[in-house]
Length: 111
Image 1 (cartoon, rainbow, N blue to C red):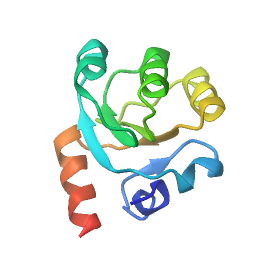
Image 2 (cartoon, rainbow, N blue to C red):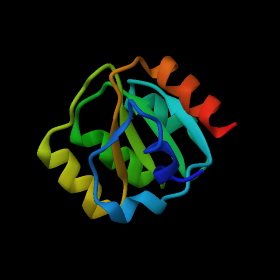
Image 3 (tube, one colour):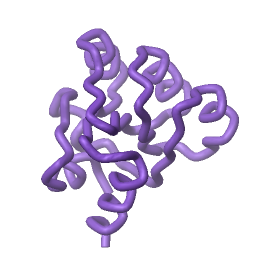
Image 4 (cartoon, rainbow, N blue to C red):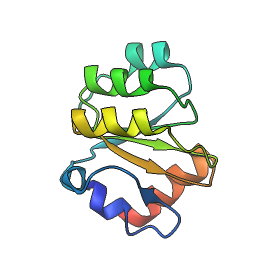
């Protein structure tokens, strides 16, 4: 799946540059503790689902070669987070739903 496939889900909104729409997503991971993410995500091209509105989420995503960060529960990332993610080629999306509801919808959409 690619980020542009997620853009087809009605309640997800892409906030990053169009250049990130082709990012491949191989898996989803949800956590709000970045040290936990760093120790447990061992695959590249993962989309992180979180409510943690910090630029450190982009730093972790960059270190782990993640494809996207999906901010859930209506969290809107700051402009500096979006700018840094664009610089690093990481897609930023937002969802009004919980992490688990968002993940369920993505999985259902994937087929």
